[in-house]
Length: 382
Image 1 (cartoon, rainbow, N blue to C red):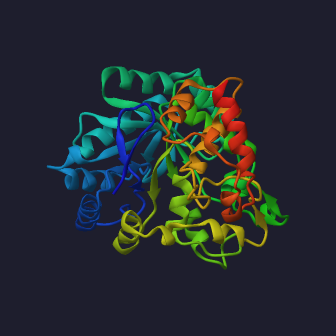
Image 2 (image 1 turned 135 degrees about the horizontal axis):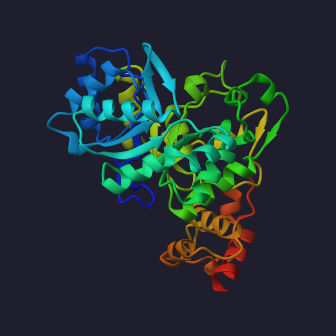
Image 3 (image 1 turned 45 degrees about the vertical axis):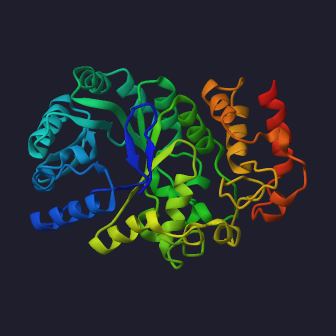
């Protein structure tokens, strides 16, 4: 298993993380077996959006003696009321729900306190100016949580939160179909048939800006919905019209700027172990470029996916990495220092490009890589 730094938190999370839906509604023995499989596979990041009290208690027992091996992404504002889940902004409910979570998990501290389900700009504005954010910040100041997070499906709300500087971690829905859709408060539109009736071209600019802004501000992204609720794995259900493998979906998400961990959904131990298998899968199994290029109604023509098909360069340039840094830099009025520093440590720079075009011949998306190298050489030299 490979691990990535989660933005500016100082935490290192496994590239494959785990959602919790597979443990909800199961007995204590199953939850323990699930956690055993996570530990054995090197998975250290678990999202805990579900407020189900039995799940929290079973997980707490399963973590006994090995709590330090896991990074827990707990959710504020996700509460249990009248026997069911509820999203709440009522501070009495929010505090009681979080205190219940600590008690049932047997923890004094949690790594990430995630402000739950912020899908509208109005909701974020209310949170930013109200008691929910103040509560999260107070928990961080007291050392009860290490980082403040926010979960969202809407790039507009997520961008506002990230730009505010108040959020250390963003939990966001990332997959190759959602990324084509403009932001909307109605998340049902992300998967509605009418949203895919016309051909779709390239990533939504606001989503691209979100990922690049997270990279610039060192806000780590943990990914939900990488499989689109499983629909992307089934050609008859996928809006893309073709089935992708779990490994292709995971690799796509991990290739986006600022992404640290993909919280793979699994309802069985077999599904969980399949996702964990990504760590030892071959590059051929992970490769998504040819599958994407063949999608009948979707086109990424001219858009670098950072997939690495451009390699190898005869001069040793990491063309995909240079292009990523170029895109991050060109999105701003000046080159961010973090981008400049990451570019500076590359062993071979864009200025070494001899314009042979080998990279362009291999690119499934017809990206003008030679021109990108020219622009990068000029930009980073200035």
